[in-house]
Image 1 (tube, rainbow, N blue to C red):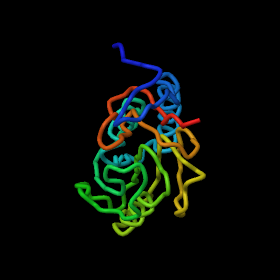
Image 2: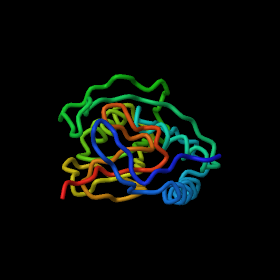
Image 3: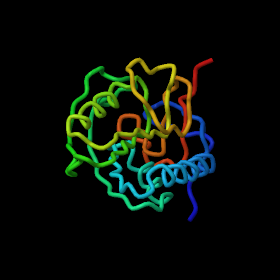
Image 4: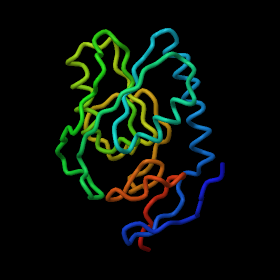
Length: 186
């Protein structure tokens, strides 16, 4: 299968340059899958993807684990069509799975301020799971202001606006196979 892998893309009037290549993403997810297999062997975890952004990452994680597991989704909004968080979390879709006594792995595309993930972790813990783990493809460590324990991180990145591989800018660009960073004016 071939992918369209340009060095730069235009989205909503902004130029984005390749930041993390498809090869780098694939290699990192393979390693993350191996670690999840070791850590959750025999535990039948429920992977809960945070829509819309995490759907591609979750699909690739699923292809890289061999453990028995379940999958569910939830949907939140804290961005709207903006490049920065609104500071408020709105739940748009709840999970369907019964999680009491189960091992939960929350799957996110990016953790920025940590607001959404803090909300999700607290909400999950209300239902008394056996454990709650967090996996994110990208973490903007310098932007994180909310206390969130992240168990698995694909890439630590600087505070840049990124696009592709599920990440969007006003709902566009999710389909790009690589991750792109907004071009800074110089």
